[in-house]
Length: 108
Length: 113
Image (cartoon, rainbow over all chains, first blue to last red; front, side, top):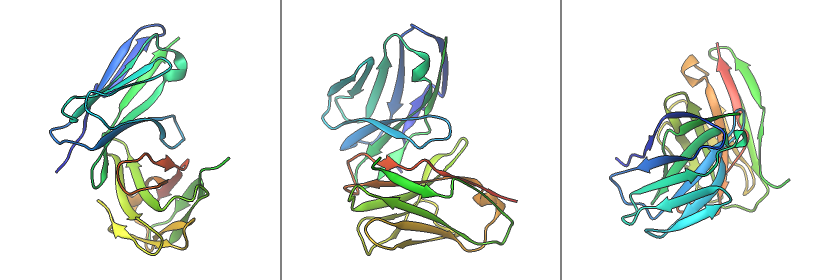
């Protein structure tokens, strides 16, 4: 059974700090996606990474796919209250499986 | 705006009642999905439709049925609702079954009493 473990489950930090959240698996994925979900809304796709070692940047967010395509990280620089939300990773092979998410709260 | 539209947004049912959740997408996507999201359980796939005319079971299909009405529409039916089906339901669509990102609707919050 393929599983995606996200850590930490919860993170509360002050505005302006940097943070990294992780998505780990023992399985290899052909691609990995990150989503952000705000209360009362559906998840919104942030990025898809497909190549081992790939790094993608989206403004203050940096996504990295592990060399072995089993793990990924999301780094946020100078976090802002607007970054608050549930961050989900999803690994894709024949199916897409979701991690349970990291709930991030940025304090103003 | 283009995207995935779900109706209704909120629903309260009594145990044993039936209802259909509607989903429509206007992005010409081939594949559509129904998920449920519960605290501590994450997103779990109920059913999916890889293309018009096909449907397949996901991780938690019991108690549900689906219909892919056409390329745009994919409905989820609860024939006899149970309290265990209290959840937030999300419809999603994508261009392919695997490897590419989903576009999600904004969800239906269902309570079964």
